[in-house]
Image (cartoon, rainbow, N blue to C red; front, side):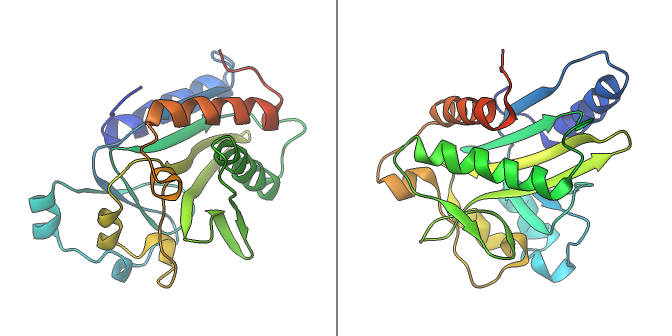
Length: 207
């Protein structure tokens, strides 16, 4: 969908969740980018936002309560954000499995570029030896309908992560596909890899 303001993406997800619950749409994978924004999950701590309102305004960074699980995260241009709107019934009603499946999608997508990524014990997301490649924060509403999802760093300006304590983890760096591979990977290229991996993990066809 290109660059979509965070508030618009929240409203879109809310509509899609209702439509999916009532059977008006099939399972849907929304892929987009956001303008600079800091989002707060349900376990966020105020001290994990390191810039005040004045500095956020000067740098063009919005701030939103996200309504998802997890801590503080950052989104910006060059980062591929995915919002799967899925009905997990009847066979996938397991939140931990769903989180691991999303991680697997991103691990496979990275592998498509020849990059080895994996999990970090006790920490949700996808990691390399350098740092965190992708963040995951989801919401599962009544009827086992999912929203929110993942953010894969592709070719974004990683300096903006200095405005937060990413996911509440102060001692781990953040990385991207482009940094790891030593050349620019486009968001479109990353989206193709994510779609292919998503089809494999969730045994689905993305049209």
